[in-house]
Image 1 (cartoon, helix red, strand yellow):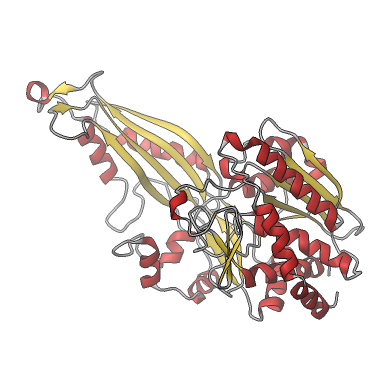
Image 2 (tube, rainbow, N blue to C red; image 1 turned 90 degrees about the horizontal axis):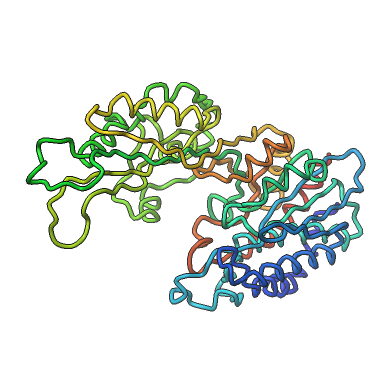
Amino acid sequence: MDYTKLSSYVDSRKQEYLNELSRMIRIESISADLSKKVEMVRCAEAVSGLMREAGIENVKPFETEGNPLVYGEYIHAGDNPTVLVYGHYDVQPVDPLSEWETPPFEATMRGDDLYARGSSDDKGQLFMHLKAFEAFGKLNEKIPVNLKYIFEGEEEIGSIHLEPFIRSHKDLLKADVVVISDTAMYGRDMPTICYGLRGMAYLELSVSNSTIDLHSGSFGGAIENPVHVLADIVSRLHDRYGRVAIPHFYDDVVEVSKEEREEIARLPYSDGEFLRQSGALATYGEYGFSTNERLWIRPTLDVNGIYGGFTGEGAKTIIPSKATAKVSMRLVPNQKSEKILGLFESFINQIAPPTVKVTVKKMHSGEPALTPIDHPAVKAASAALEHVFGRKPYFIREGGSIPEVLTFQQILGAPVVLLGFGLPDENSHAPNEHIYLRHFYDGIKTLAIFYEKLSM
């Protein structure tokens, strides 16, 4: 492919792209709102239409008990790699509506950004893949890889029906690599590849004594107070150096190489900017690691909520019957959620006094995901980004979890390349969501070149 012609072609179609994307954005595909069921179907049909117009073949919506999954393919590259592209057409709710400066489903240009719900997460990024495919046909170029597409309408509500679909359609979705553009670059005009995600182990910890709240004058000082016990347990979950105090918690953690830590250190980072975004007073965490390392390559334990007893206005003198904490643990590669949950429960049973009943309720979990940065698909993505953006990309991990990544890796046995073009501050789940248009256009170019590089 002539990359200069590709760039000129994309640049010449900018307004057309915006018009098409704006039409898709107008569809209020809020999966969390059951009253929008018709809109969800409309959006699936709109995505199907864009796929057919681009030249993708065998486009088919698959009905589920929820919202449709849309599949399409173009298998004409022989033994060259097969790429499965995943994205989602559902969006977050718009509340609070009063904080939007312009209507959330009317795409509006302000400066270098396009504002609308779904502009970045994920309609805009899904759209880039379709236009990258379309560019080959318009330029009379042969598409150098086999392509499959699966777009869902339930990502924002937990991808309820995605995993069962993948399991029952393994042959249909079989691929050498999965590409997802639903992540952010590290910063504006900073090409980025995300190669790792932390896993999650989430639980509810409860401490109880009596079956009812008791009068503190009649029973206080004579029986154990569940709130006191829970507070003591929580205070013992970390040591003075910010490390999780659960025995054997770190046993399976693979130490990151010096080279990888140097790559993380290469990123432009400012404590001031990090604190501005978070609203916190100071950084804090495990001793011996930078902030980004704590977020990406180290496991953590956090109490997400704690409650028990009387919390209303005025006074009520009771000994609470029960106190509860919600706890999440972010896990890094080689840690297993089931093992970590077991270690947590054993530790709690060890330190809890015999005067109370302690219950650990395991709620949900997900495993960490990692794609080696020397994988051919990652190298191809890196080369494509460098060509379009004019600089070597940064390699980052994400502190959060994307369950679909592990689903594809486990069921299809294919590595996942997270090639996103959003930005961390584009309000993807908040009012005034937007996308930086240079990334939008350069994303189309990058994806087309990525397919070319992958075939070499």
